[in-house]
Length: 225
Length: 248
Image 1: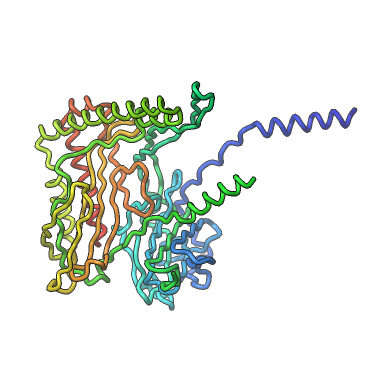
Image 2: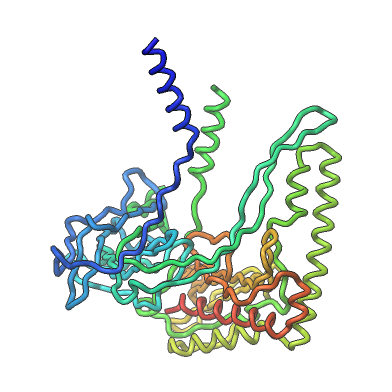
């Protein structure tokens, strides 16, 4: 009898917890300062994230969360978090789109430069080259043949800047209509407009999204059919 | 179970086939391009309303599975909706004409001003653009000097839009393509610029709308022509600057 009571109590608890909706986690907030502790003067190329997919693909997206476990750079008095990406073979055969993802209330503040095999900077994109591309604030480019790496680091000059963006989107509702003539029904969707003004702050931390697309063939394999 | 597996297979295959748009980015410093011929007729003469998620579309969706009667109701709703949109389009264009609004002149002026700072040698390229406002076909120019390109900025549509009961706000949609003058098959730049996009196309340029220019109904646009005109002017200028930015 005692076991039965326990079982009943346990069952009730399970059912109640199953019904209770779990509130979503709060959105990640912008990180505006870095201590500079343990930062290095030059990026480590050995830790580069590969932009070549394991399976053959014509396009490939890599998302990287830049947070406190990621390394940081110091240059003069400025500190930034960074990630290095290794370009696929035949780098010049690709279109690369890279930038900070527009999250709920923050955007990684991107600064992008290209490096050769020795880690020497070949190109750096000025702030006025950055645009909102889909859901990232970033740049697009075709690598040159001698470019091997992309260095993405947080831009201290941009960090802390707040941007209000008006967003108009379409929401969807689902319905079901019964046909009295046949007795059968069908489901349908209706749409409605949604308007929001979203405030996002540029941050040292957040998601960096990189999309690589092969101009011909597959990524790293320009002659592949 | 077989049906489920079949459905999953179809969904998987479709998902596998879906490939996002691939832009062709341009880099002035490494391109060797110094001379640009710009195709004339960048922006349509008149604005067009863009209405999404309307009552008519929703009614057509809700009745689509109800046999012939549902089809008739849906078609009637779509027809009524089209009539309303046509009427609203006429009213908005009348407002803009009363202010002597010239969308093409506004866009061209802002675009040329932005290009000037980039030190290109700019000339115009005459070509017939069809009514669909698509990109023009460029024929090879064997005698074109080295480093020259033909730039087509095709304004597909612009004007005021309303999305499922939201406020009326300006929108602009532009296709951009630049090709080598000698070999037009060689695409130097390809992208799309959209002001106040409702469903932003991944990897294309989005210019957020200015929240100050919004109207609850078309009658409010008619009541404040100066504000309506200024909202659209800002949309075109911002779109022109974003387009020119692709040529840096």
